[in-house]
Length: 285
Image 1 (cartoon, rainbow, N blue to C red):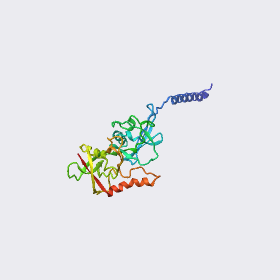
Image 2 (cartoon, rainbow, N blue to C red):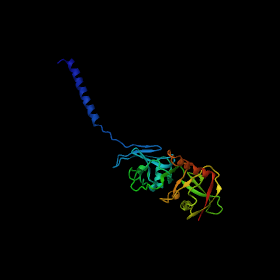
Image 3 (cartoon, rainbow, N blue to C red):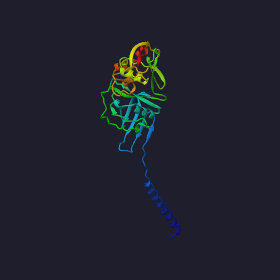
Image 4 (cartoon, one colour):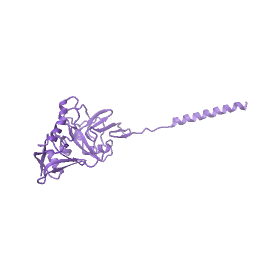
């Protein structure tokens, strides 16, 4: 056969075998899927390593503080308040980029349309993220007490948590109550629910090194515009949580109720009375 015809045939054979080798190589490549973790003001984690497949995001209603909102599998809800702890709040706040945080119970005056999704997080306080805690699984609310009139809430900080002091003390253990969060001191008002709330007063006095305390009077007008804790409700649940009672820690932090103007008036009424009214004096012993 003429050599001129053999050269093109050889080139076709070579290209044919090269094509087969490339096809075999592509089919032999295996890509291992990986789980993803995205961190921002809310956190989204996809976990495919264990027996559960949980996607969740967490946020606080007011960024640095407020009701804990949790989203699981595209459903928004809240944490059961009767098992929320300082350890849970501390891990949650560190996950959101803060130094730490503490838990409190936010008064629930009306239904905001959300439902409980998680009964308890089960954090010990040493975890890096809420995902590392024992129970961030949606639907496990068998021991959730929905009758409690509060939401699980947290306040994050970058320097220090909360502390109390008594000012204008005429005698040791006697004076106006002030509270600091992250180093910011404000009067504690408690316009409704504080004066006869021995549980909350005992909590304050115990953090100051006393055994218990009692309400004395309201005699001094508030000299500043900002206060902590405008309202305290009926005490229920864990006494170790802040003040041991459902509270409004930051004025106007209750969820906005688009269905009721009366509920919205309640949100600012106590804040108004706290900034224009008299402050509480207590005695610790």
